[in-house]
Structures are given as structure tokens and as C-alpha cells.
Length: 157
Image (cartoon, rainbow, N blue to C red; front, side, top):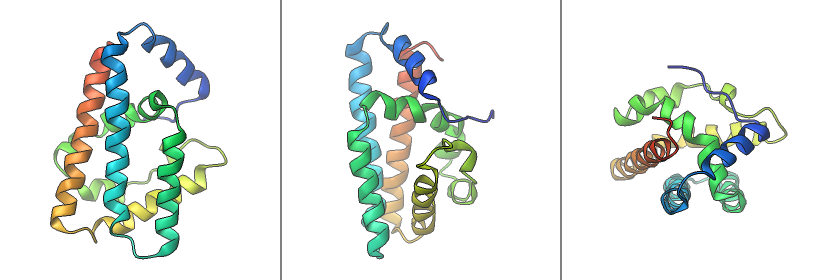
């Protein structure tokens, strides 16, 4: 499994040029579905939070994500999800809860904010009910499925 680094803005621009050559009737629905699934995955965690500050942080993330171009959400995360597909399929929560995500986060002014969000999610995952955890894994597998379909559409697999 190779290490995936955060994409630079020029990397994203190159990928946007590449996908502009693809059929938008295929890619656009994937961008929308990915965005909606990502948002619903975060909503599962929000329902479990008890600390007001954590709720505010995750709601802030959801608002920021709603402002992010649909294409960029998928482009910036697709390889990170693809790289851990075996762990998603195996529902290996220990892998995700014990993982150090710092190398996957872009080194910019948002790094501390994103690391804090990752810790909130990790700290609260085990507090989810069995039903909520099952729903979380369903959403995670759906994200992986969307990534696979997208990678196929742009010729990466």
C-alpha cells in the first residue's frame, strides 16, 4: 500500500483538466453522490456527540464542505479512500481508530482544524450504537464504491 500525499492546487487543476475530457453525464452524478454520502457519514457522528464544542466543530466542517466544489471533495480524497479499501471492506475499525492521519493532511492553516476533526471522529466512533456503526460502514463502503466507479470513468483502474 503506497503512501498518499495531500494534493497541491496544481495537482487538482491537472485532475480537473483530465476529468474535463470525461463524459459529465457519468462524472457529475458521482460528484453529487459522493458529496451527499460524505455529508451523511458525518451526520452519523454528529448525532452521537455530547460536547457542544465538538458538535459545533463537525457542523462547521459540514458547512465548509458544502462550500467546497463537488469535484474537489472527490479529487482530494479518492486516493486516500482507495488506498485503505481493504480496511473499509473488512470493517477494520482498529486500523482507522489507531491510524496517524497527519501525513495525509495538507500542511496549511487548516491542518490543526482537520486533525481536531479526525480526533473527534476517532474518539466518538466507539460510542456509536451497533446500528449506527453498521450505517457508518455502509456509508464508507458507498464512498469506496463511488471512488471505484470514478477511477474507472477516468481510466485510473
